[in-house]
Length: 188
Image (cartoon, rainbow, N blue to C red; front, side, top):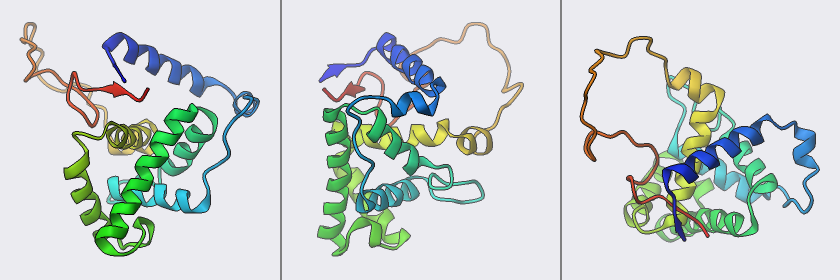
């Protein structure tokens, strides 16, 4: 595992933006691409996305196409170690649901999925890099989607008073993602 610094993160974001600009035909031409997710894994990814960001007065992750985007990333982009780590993290959630509720995660009602995921989160978010990265990926896929970026978020032309010299400390600095600053790690 390697620590992710700001420069590497910006390089990764730039690469993702460049990848998004490629036509679908270029992505399909990638040699050795992995197969699409099977029906069971797709149902699990859909249930996970719906539990993380359900539909309310704004579109949820499922309505924003997050499961399909996750499938596309696993098929067209993820290296074999990343694909294995992400799919293993999803399988671990499913195993926890079976252990806790007696059914696979995708077959549980929404309220029970939330209970299972909340308990799983409490045990695994801080110490399980693959799970934290999976959760962060789903959240980022949602906010990079059109509904996430234009309906859920909003643009404020004037978000507040401009202060020329606001001290930036660890407590005032903004960050995004599932893990606090300095804890972001890439799956090796």
